[in-house]
Amino acid sequence: SRPNPAGGFRLDKRFNELGPRRQSEDYNVYQINTGIRGDLVGLRDWTYDAYVSYGRVNNGTVYTGYLARSALQRLLDAPDGGASICAGGFNPFGVNPLSAACIAYVSRVAKNVTTNDQSVAELNLQGGLFTLPAGEVRAAVGAAYREQNYNFSPDNLLLSTFTLNGVTGPELAGNSGLPLSGSDQVSELYGEVLIPLLSNLPFVRSLETNLGYRVSDYETIGKVGSYKADLSWEALNGLRFRGGVQRAVRAPSIGELFAAQNLSFPSIGVPISSTGARQFSGDPCDIRGAYRTPGGANANAVRTLCLAQNVPTQVIDSYTFSNSQVSGVTGGNPMLEEETADSFTVGATWQSPFAAPWLSRASGSIDYYDITIENVVGTVSTTEQLRRCYNQDGASNPTYDPNNIFCRLFSRDPNSGQITNTFETNANLGTLETKGIDFQVDWRIDLVDLGAPDWGSLALNVTGTKLLEWERQDIPGGAFTDRKGTISNSFGLTLPEWKVLSTLNWSQDPWNVGLRWRYQGSVENFNNRSQVVDAIHYIDLNAGFKVNEVVSLRAGVNNLTDEQPPVYAPAIAANTDPASYDLIGRRYYLGLTARF
Image 1: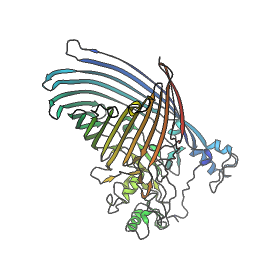
Image 2: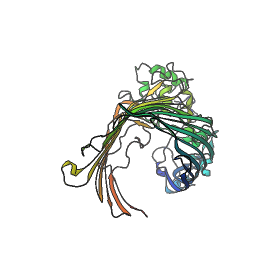
Image 3: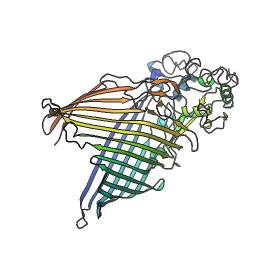
Image 4: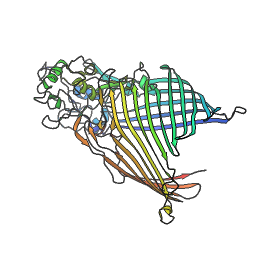
């Protein structure tokens, strides 16, 4: 089954006997702030506000459940299978549990230390300049300085390497790390002006514009500028229209710039039989996957590409790869440039002008946004590398060229054909475009105004968003992929079309009780469009009691109905998205607040 039947072979084993791989975090955080504010006497109504701040985070991380490759190799090399080293030794074939002595022999505990501190100094001035027929022109100016220092000191175990048959890898199986130390300083100047244009005219109660500009000088990327131009028009009492354009800039973080290249094990999923759903996951060269569906239009082209990438001829028509993970490296890129975002927004706000008690405290807003971010800093995930290399989108590699840019981000072992050396380092990718609508409704009423007894008041808030578009390029000039309404591990994002957060609170001093509803719409598995993750609803309850002016109590239960996270594959972590779905289930809390 190999080019050289007498050659070496690879055996993968997960050492469950060592227990789960865990990280225990210990944080020590402190921050010091001081400032001063006052009036600039003699300069109209101008005021100043200045402050300085220093903060520091010390973080220790302890890793358990990891294995030393050199210790394991000594067991394998021992003539008696390692029995003379630890009780029972190690037999790699079959299910042969390790003894407690052997577990202790191969296990290692590592500890990393990370420190991060930040210093900030800022001065702001604001006040009126002069008066126009429509009102006073007001301005604000300011200056700021920020400095951040970062230092990561990995355990010597994470620095150690192990060499076998001329191949060098990390000593600690499943983890590695290199020291990282970096700093960044930025100095900024900004100015902003509010100009009243019209007022007290038919259908123009007020019309004003807000203009601003900021110049930032970063140690890492140099000088960059950002700006905004907004317009606000109050057409009628309580009805206001607003909109504007803005250029925003984000400099790469220290980690994005300088993080050392570390070993990683990205998930690619496991292919489903070609007779079932066409799930584009797993190794595309696996004969069980959708990429090589017998009779499929591109099956032969995929087979040819797999051969060109080192899948041996002897196994090409029986090749399988059942592991859901592959090995690779992640890391920073000191050549990164800044991200720039251009946005356009337009919307309206409404504040009830009615005197009726049941309408007087109603308000709402709706806004449309259109945002384009260029030079997006990120990585091309391994699943996306495979999807694009094997042209699953129909546009990234139509000729199935092994020299395609996505195909060059990973390699294959020439002896086994298995994927190795995936490359997920930071880069300025292409462009991200997103559009959507945000809305909010607020309403409050006293129960007595509804004809009920004087039992307090009710407050309702509904906040939501409708996603219209979310498209991203992975390389400049490349094809855009629409991710709206999908979930996948390629970008670590769940992008439902609808998200809504609603709260209903009742209050009557000293009590308050609240009900919260969190809704997230259904999404498709991006890598398997036949798999739909249903919409999910979370219900939370909370209550509070004000004992006196100093002490108050609060309690509540989150995820009242104990909704479990959806399971899909391939997923970001643990077959679900922990950033979007509740992993814990129903939980309770109780708190006390005292003010002195």
